[in-house]
Length: 445
Image (cartoon, rainbow, N blue to C red; front, side):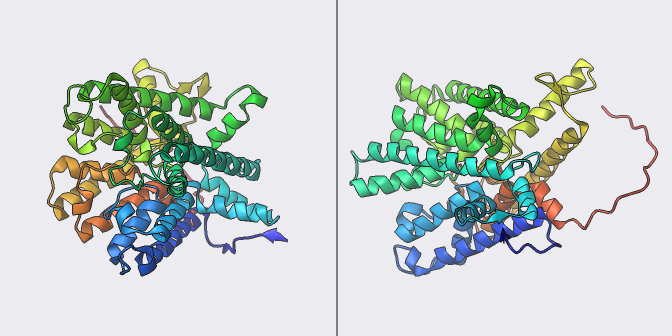
């Protein structure tokens, strides 16, 4: 008996992905509104429940209420499950249940899985999903044990274990939620925590295809072009980000100046890693210099890698545009990475993603400037954090109006699903044209 998710034939994979996330957010909103989810025993306001559920399912981390003091154990578990579903994707989790039950995966479902993890083909897609699930839960489990042992010295063992599980899921899925109230600023100089958290965030942000490639490296002894590009640009962005934080905040008495040299290094690296999509912090973001905050906006807009738990325009999209600029300046017709030529179709796709994301970003900033009473840079930072599904804030999230919260909810949703996926889901069926228009000449530059 074949495993099917009751997918109607007229529904395209992008439309199913959009509908699936909307369903997850809706269920999460209802659960978080219930009195059994809140410490006060009262209903949470609909807009606050919707905002929290959207932020968790879209693995962003922006919050309008404090998670640790507002939600009880049940509510926090709901948030943790939403982060896991949002990070790995509901199709990936559905495949897990199908594999456990011994069901077969249909061709339609394989096509949907390919779309969900941004794989380039359906070949071996179920095998990749199986390995990704094993790899993901293993990383989360090991990290949860390490964090639990670390926190066992500060809190009861049961609470330490729960904190380890919650924050392991949050960090690996780039969720950005924490139970401490001030993110991880208590552990700025803690090497064990910084190392564990950074590994979790980086692993979740590399992308499932890259994780599978690394998992099988001992057999193949080589990496795919995708993995080479993702690892190269991710390493470069983390290094540059850490250097910028270190240089610009070195003399800032509210951030790095009062820290020891090891703490300065830990904080710079962790903040660079976190800014890419995790949304956690070990120093006070609100006290950073505006130059650093603006640079963070650029990093958040780029985001994580394709098929990962993070958002943004994605590292490979950014790298292809850099490659295009370099090729144009050098007078080359082709974009080449590691002796491989990038197809023109990918360049058009990358340009489309950047332009659509940039237009949405600018519209969101303009709307927030209209509806909110806050300075330009903090609102711009908030918009970048939402569309990159990062979760960092410079203090305006709690002050958003209801309209502002709805705007950010929409932005987080677009950032997690991807503007192209939503566009593909809403567009009418494509009709093949039997003709091409004549080529025209336009002067640019």
